[in-house]
Length: 127
Image (tube, rainbow, N blue to C red; front, side, top):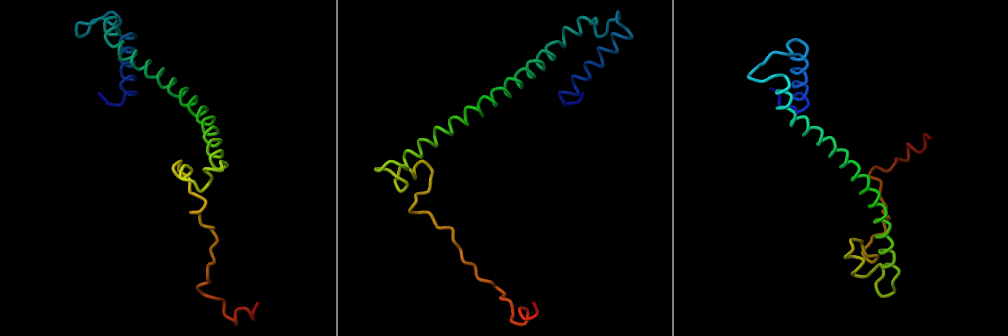
């Protein structure tokens, strides 16, 4: 029997369908069709519960994401308040401890790159 849960469930359904259609009153392995269905019912109950939990998990993730947006705004307000505090500021240790780069440690970002192969005068004369 396959290990894929979806394939297993399909196999159970196939066995039930064939048994119901072709030999509904016959007993196999000491089980009637009703007894067989009762015996494999926990598999279907577990699958249904997993579907419910997946739906619940999806809903909780959406709730978390919405809460994170609000929490992020609150955290940014606190960080901006630390930056604006005259005793703390952008150069303070609290600002750095919150995971930000202090203003004094930032680089300007300006770079002056030199050309590795400057254009030759002959190239400029042709244009």
